[in-house]
Structure formats: structure tokens, C-alpha cells
Length: 181
Image (cartoon, rainbow, N blue to C red):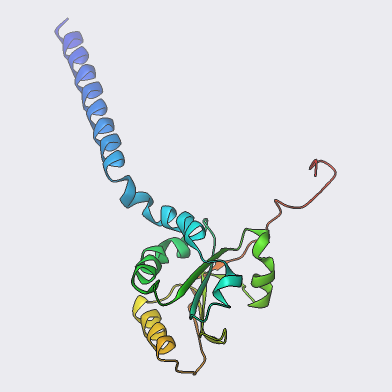
């Protein structure tokens, strides 16, 4: 009899502890959701806050052009750095963000030979390509290139890091016999 009551108490304690742990986890997730999902949110906002490429290349300002995708882990890692650069330089430099999954940007993807993302291209005021960064980049190196861009130094540089995401062929827009398209 006594062992049954101990067993009952132990089951009740286990359930209580489990409920407390789950509650703490859920509350933490709610309180820190911006921290956990900040990079994804930033990537989604990039496209919305982007200057149109046609405008960027004709308004006599240098241009920061980034090719990215919302599924790209390296893009997510770099998003806070890119956002900080945008906040700091957006008055003097156009920031253009093109999602490689959007067929609207396929012309630019081909034009700038985008094979891996993130890819950042920096252009001077006249639209001349000055720097290309492919893969995960150090914020300091990108700042140095932006400084050169502002000083109108004309040396082209291409910096490739092995931490990239390969562009996957987007088959969402293909028409087939069962696609109703």
C-alpha cells in the first residue's frame, strides 16, 4: 500500500517537473524569439527594404548588391553584419538585395555569374564592378572595401570563402503535365 502511494507521488512529481520545464522553455522561446529568429527575419526584410537595381545603377551612388536566399545558412549568419553595414552606410550607398529564388532576378544572377551565395558585389557611382565577395565574409574586410569604394579607389578584388551555399535550381516555376500551369 505504501509503495503504491510513493509511486503515485513520484508520478505526480515527475509530471509537475515536466510541466515546469516545458513552461520555462516556452516562455524563454517567446521572450527570446527575436534572438533566435533574428537572422531569418533580417533576410526576409532585406528584399522589402531593397533599392530596385535599375534605380541603384542610375542614381550616381555606389551600390552594395547582395544575392541571397532565405534558406541559406551562411546568408543567415551574415545577415546581422550586413544589416549593420546597411544601417551605417545607407545614406551614401544603395543597398540592393536580390533573392536568388525569385525568377524576377534571373537576368542579374546570370549577368554577375552567381554560382554560390551569399555573393556581394560592390559598384562605384558609375556602375563599375569594384569588389566581389563570395561566401561568408569578415565584416572588417567588407568595411575596408566599402571605404575604398567611397574613396573611389579603382582596384578590383574578388574574395572567395569556401563557406557558401550552392544555388539550387528552382523548380517551383516549371510547367509540367500536372502543374496546372
